[in-house]
Image (cartoon, rainbow, N blue to C red; front, side):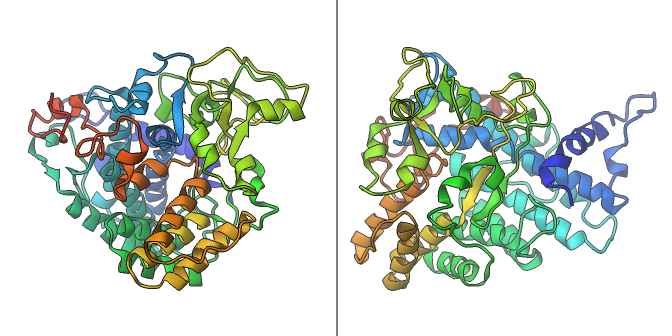
Length: 493
């Protein structure tokens, strides 16, 4: 069966057009199908579901920006004014007027709305596969809401109906505890009604739902619940760590959707795009933007030198940790080993000589029409190593079992050719935190790990406690609500 990434393009654009011209006051009959007359067959539901999947691809920006917000990387780019919104977030001087934050808000709510469109008409037509369609839909809605609550805290919660223009005047921001409750409800349904293995690569699975549910519990410090669901996945699911010899390959295009990938966002280079519509791209634009400025040589393609790792994160790796070389590209060391390679050493801003090797453009892509926009590198949104480390943290911080926590932590360490950790209590907690940083570097988790564990102010330059745990609600969204919504603390002026 076709990979999900190969069928999303035409279906999602067709779906957008399908209900774009359905105004009652227009006398001339529209050639497009009215959205109220849709959902008459399984094919209709499947098309709508593919459209709901489509906005997963928009998360390329927020995974990159989240890494930049942490102490792992600097914004980089061409200059201090290259993409100002990213530079501001890097320096912790962002305000409610920020293009990247508004994109995250708008694109994630678009994903929510597409999922809610399906749920609004969930009872219209019956077919044998509908429970699976609804389970996938509810996973996607939970994922989009989880991203929103991570970034913005209390957010408007709408369930099983579309948010139409004008509705924003009557919708309040919902306390994040209630948003999490809905996320849990959706994911519990998905866990109960999805298989561990799908016939079509890219569709979400029971494992993805369990992992995201465990993560949502962990973010709320519901350690017992997190440990229970994550250990069920560990003990009964189909996933495992890649062996040490294959671990570097997990970031290559030809090794996507492997046994370690629990939830992977699909990208493709078969269709182009433009800089005017990042959310329209089928390729992973962040991969091109992370690359080496002016690079010419083997293996890698050129890039725009954003999201550059710091010396601090390089130093966080222990001696002998094999992950360093396949996580972070030391460009000078690389050129010494590959004398035909070169790059523009004098170009770029905040250049450290290090690049995010996990998400960096490789040669061999179709590159149409722009190599920086059409990279096919999938985002490994949740890996099995992350599941093991989340389980270890829940078991340890919940005072459930340090022995089992050590076991899961050491599986990750041993794969990296490192010895066992034997600490307990708070020392084990710190060892788990250290391991999360080096195992997941470059993947967009570090900022939120620091925030949820109360360590951000000590680690991130410029971070203000009581303010920067959340990002501001975009000012345009507050104005569109009729100024009904209050701003997050610290961003009112």
